[in-house]
Amino acid sequence: MNSIVSNKKHVILDTDTYNECDDQFAIAYLLKSQDVYDIEAITIAPFKNRRISTEDYGIELSYIETQKIFELCKENYINKIFKGSTNYITNGYHNRNEAVDKIIEIALKNERTYILCIGALTNIALAIQYEPKIIGKIEVVWLGGNTLLQSSNKGTNFKDLDAVKIVFESKAKLTIIPCIGVASNLKTSIYELSYYIKDKNDLCNFLYNRFAEISDYYVDENFNRKTLWDISVIAYFINPNWFHCFSVSCPFISTDTKYQLTKDRHKVTFVSSINDNSIFHDLFGKLVK
Image (cartoon, rainbow, N blue to C red; front, top):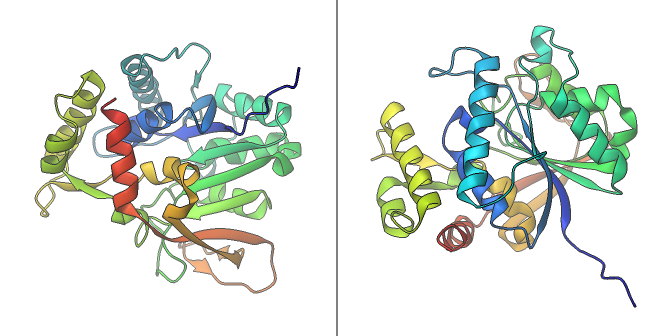
């Protein structure tokens, strides 16, 4: 009997789930796309913001939030969710933790593992530092920074600048989805969500309410329109035709987070544009099922 070869991608999603409301949509989108993804693990990345004062508190809330999304999707989260770094390498944090260990374990056992990163790169950078053998076995797809010619990358998952530098310099295969100018096109509103997903099922109502809650907290002058940045990374493998990319010599990163263009270094991939309408159509269609 011939064995069936699966074309599904072995993936780890590294996420700061409770940071805002887009991570929740991204996790649900991933769980609803298991025809494409073999989900090996969800690892929790550090964050703090105006609502959450410390990274370790953020880790706990993200862990609980991720479990909740698994339950709403009727998926088993046992041995799937792993707590990660509670601070940034930039701040002197170098601890191994269960997320770092799990990234190393999964990367070593697979021929290729795709690490989908929608937060700070701390966990991935530490995994690379502790086990360089994974460098040739992983592909990192990161939502972070801005387009190459922007004057700064501050505020765009660059909170751990040292981690960004480690991943960029590692020569691991790397795709960057810029925030401003690319993922920023994935903007929706409470009115659109009310039409497409509200009251369709418990998962949809949870996501709708999270969006409404965050929209109220972060007052937006654009009629409660917010960007679901993180769904871009999930959509990247679902349909490559939704994305335009180009290869470039890996830039250096200055201390003020700006990209410094180069000519003859190893290549990295930047996404230059996305088809936001197709991504939202796919996302909403999967969430309501």
